[in-house]
Length: 215
Image (cartoon, rainbow, N blue to C red; front, side, top):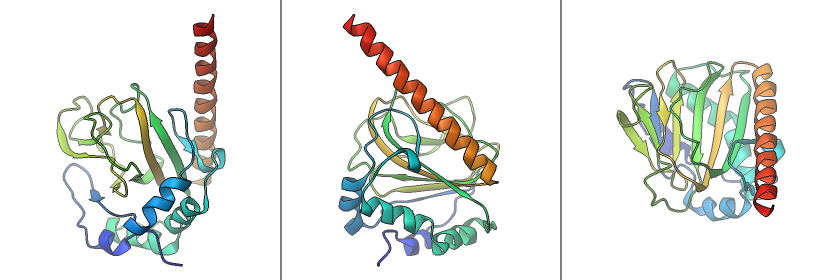
């Protein structure tokens, strides 16, 4: 079966070294695969990141995940970032909605080696929700590059102490798949538990808010 990903386009995109190592690849998810993936994308009705085992999805999305977990995918990133990812576990989460509180400037945790974001939004008009790669950790306008979260776009970077990123506030649907190679399986278990607790807390708050409004 053909891959959903354009690894040749990825290999031909140069790595940018300003501030930290990153690259952006529009059309990384092949055009002929996007419609089916969009239909099979997990139904995520709340803000937050959700591990794959916490959501349900269709076969086209499952094929995308299979391609991202392939040896060819890993080897392409090893070559691009000059890093050995052999035996490094991966961690995948999905988002379906964004809240006004999301997008605060951060660098990702030290346990993450490479961060990959794949956006799956058919179009993007709002000024908010566009990820900004930044030169500092305290100024959202000190921008290296801004990335509209349009369908099929890949952003990947090597995590470092200055890999600052964030975005202006946005509330509404915003689909993104986050893939990380991390330092150990213990990290995967801890992060999955953290995401599960965060999702449960947000669900509880939403239920409480609904009850309060009804009263």
